[in-house]
Image 1 (spheres, rainbow, N blue to C red):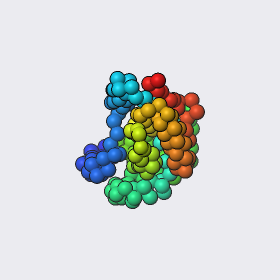
Image 2 (image 1 turned 120 degrees about the vertical axis):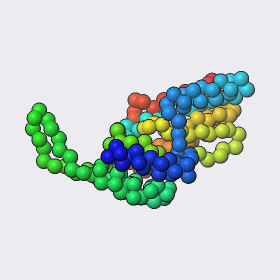
Image 3 (image 1 turned 30 degrees about the horizontal axis):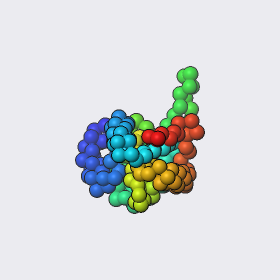
Image 4 (image 1 turned 180 degrees about the vertical axis):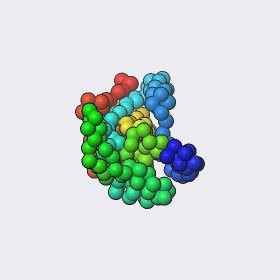
Length: 194
């Protein structure tokens, strides 16, 4: 499987290049970029506010049928997805204190350690990100997805930022609920420059 993943990495990068909005930064880059934008806002007398939403047990909740639908809609290589889903759906056995269970098959979830897991999640969330990445008069909106977190940063005047961020947070929540992805009740935070 590792060799298969390594050989197909260029195919995956090609999809990411065609869907560049799916290529998000890592946590460190996201934090540094967010802080730089906040510092710039303070210097210019603007307000910056962000909401960071954690999706609970994210990889375990991805529906395989929805993955197929999203792959088709975004031009993700279906031959690659087919093999990945075969791996995810393969029979599994649980071992507890030396006892072996009967074979189990799953039709939901992807393996978090899989080489393609984060890319499949970005593909799965692409429509949700597009829904909140709309131009808003008087402010700048920047959505990001990093592993199992989604953040929205809004920059503008205080009143516009408050109205826009609260509206987009509700819209994001609706998008995630429609995809049956549970939001963490303890890891969602809002930070602001003022």
